[in-house]
Amino acid sequence: MQKKLTITIDENVYDGLYKVVGRGQISRFIEELVRPHVLHKELDAAYQQMAQDEARETEALEWAEATIGDVSDEPR
Image 1 (cartoon, rainbow, N blue to C red):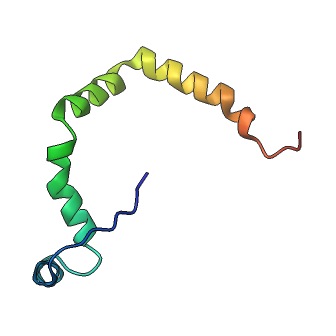
Image 2: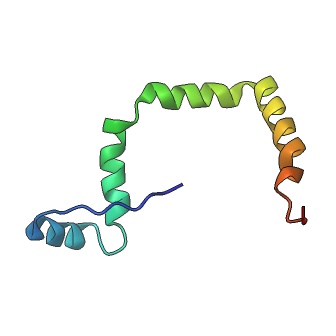
């Protein structure tokens, strides 16, 4: 999920970003620069380790499949 963020930067910095990175690419550029400073590699490693746990993933899939009926559009 993405969140919208409004930031204020110097006009010259913005012009430089626009020229170097290009229109529509500034958000991704900034995110890639910031990500290593706010998301720790240990967290990424933990997620990868969890995904490799086949028993856990099977259990999670079974749970998700069992609860899909809970969000149906049927009238109550």
